[in-house]
Image 1 (tube, rainbow, N blue to C red):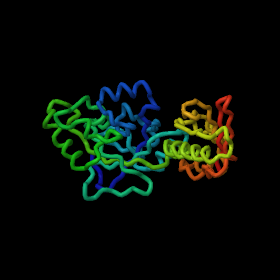
Image 2: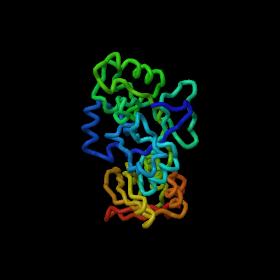
Image 3: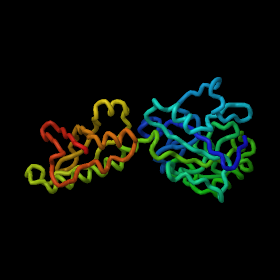
Image 4: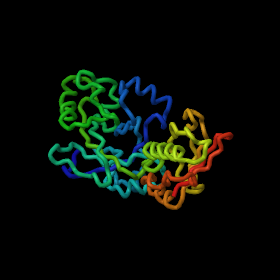
Length: 300
């Protein structure tokens, strides 16, 4: 498997976290001992499988072929985007095989660096996230919030020492990949934790400033965020979720978030809707029924 030093390959992988697989996630955390993990973002074909099936007969020119075998990496980002046009949520990754510390390709405009992964010689098993425990060479505490290695020198050291420490393990002879993830494409960039935390804060401030006596001491202690089918939201202009409100902040409310034109445009692009939250001066953007435990939010 060889490439030019500056060559970038692309792939689109499934999400793997507590939302994607609630029961399996708990088992994985215990098995892997990655208690710090927020989301697994790896090149492993078991947990982060390719989200589409290439047509190897007619699309082979887009496919990276290694040792005569088709891989799950592709030369063209446009090809990957086209194949994923009907997929709501996925990780669009840019990868560099055998990267150089001094020549790290800068992709910050559209991508964020997530770490280094190590793939076995067959190219589909991550030594870091699906290697079965290789404590002689590295410890799970060295892996970041995505299951990868953040430091180049450490990743390269692991790559060098694995075949020495585990000469009989067939995946110990591995390839080093630099991994970047697209900031917006395939991501839940609109209705996410940052948006929900900001909306939670604005609701608390609005209730505090309200002249309506029944909302004195009222506050919000959380809003559930999750991946929702984009077509459903585009069709209805509504996001249905759950919020915890009340004078103790623990009453469970059905929350409906109504998207205005600006918010709908942001959602369609997968960008932040935070500035679509109205000012917390008045309550004209909030409808609430305390007896039915229902609240509706109107975004710009």
